[in-house]
Image (tube, rainbow, N blue to C red):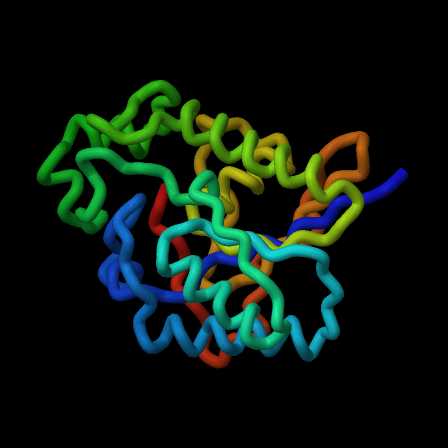
Length: 214
């Protein structure tokens, strides 16, 4: 029996994270704190003498630039994959979690109630998002069977991966946080997925913001 391991890394902090905005597909940049978090995360992997086989990231710059710290530390290639993007939040995208309920109360209510087939007025439904994320990690698992994969992505995307690995229902409330620049491990041993450890931010000097993408 061979085990495929994923080290899932959330991108470093952006100004929109600090403003508690729903970023979705908006291509926001890391702020200075996020850049430092990326460097500390890469150094922690280096200090741990982590052996991995391949690196992937979302194509959004906040993920790519976080992955760049790993590229620079380990001299590896980053394979950029748009399937690893955050969920598209439709009409809510770009709004803070204080603004969204006022601007679009009905859509916000559908969002927080986790209505599985609601696309948030032009975004992705939870069912569509789950299908995209599951297809992506199953594809990478098949491509790199028995290997260790580093994957830099987004808070909502990694929460979905947690749900897949732990068999948490899609319509239940979020039960884990995904802090910026955190290390999160899931594995597949040919019989199924499991969560190894989650939300490790011991490498960060002053903690990190949690995801607001419900």
